[in-house]
Image 1 (tube, rainbow, N blue to C red):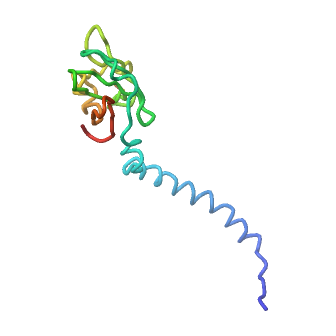
Image 2 (tube, rainbow, N blue to C red; image 1 turned 60 degrees about the horizontal axis):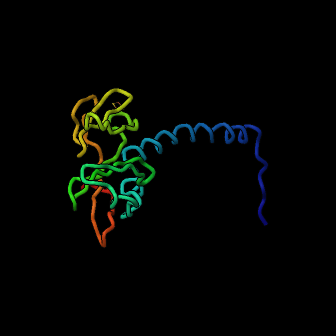
Image 3 (cartoon, rainbow, N blue to C red; image 1 turned 120 degrees about the vertical axis):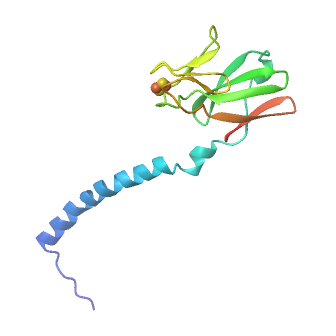
Length: 148
Ligand code: FES
């Protein structure tokens, strides 16, 4: 037969107070760890997916689409060549827009510019836009996460 010891008021209060303190200390470490080591599902994206409507884009044209919850644009460079880039600015993450008249992406937040391959044309961004791998099969255009 086991004897149960009554929990003292002091012991109970220590437990109640220490749990939030431990949580407050551990939570930033967990959040920071996810920033430094993002979950594999984020870095890989949703895998290989078709981009509907891409076949109708004329050479020199482009189409906006979403991949992995992020805005992207695909350009038709030639009959059988496409380039797909993220429209998330690599400076601080604003959504950028293609400027048809000027033929570059421009960020509305701090003015960074990128060409259609994602190369930085003007800071403050220093890293190129993320590119997707593009493949064509049976007349359909597919994109896939990872560097093109
Ligand atoms: S977020 Fe795009 S230039 Fe700063």
